[in-house]
Amino acid sequence: MDLGREEFDWDRMRQEEDDYFAVKKAAPKTMETTLKGVLSRMSARAGGEDDPIVAKLRSLPYSEYLATEHWRKTRERALNRDGFQCRICASRKALEVHHLTYERRGEELPTDLITLCGPCHKAQHDRKA
Image 1 (cartoon, one colour):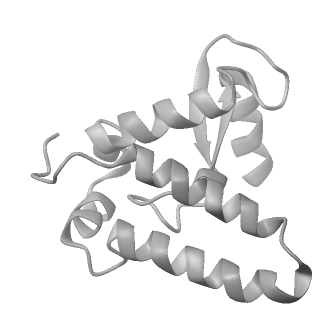
Image 2: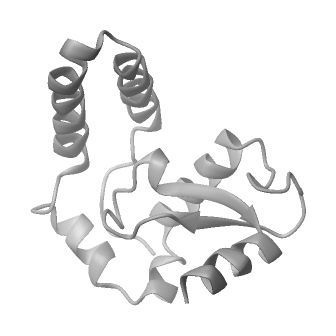
């Protein structure tokens, strides 16, 4: 699905993620203030809630959202980050990317997603039910 947006700058997002995790290792007194700044920059980059593209992505039925180019790239990035294996059992078969939260759907943070195999993904949803 083409949403008419310029190509997403994955290199910039990777750098911002690296900055985010580097800050988490910073001294505890400055960490909260610095993290707020990094997250604010990430939100501004993603367009925040006022971004019409994010609004469009969030308005789509979930099944349609999963068919977007945005989700395909986001999913691929999560799979790559997790070494193309389930984070629970280390299986490399039937991999899926699970949302830990849907709060930022359309502008997910890396920490919002986890790679799971089909059985572990089902078990996660069964636990919540």
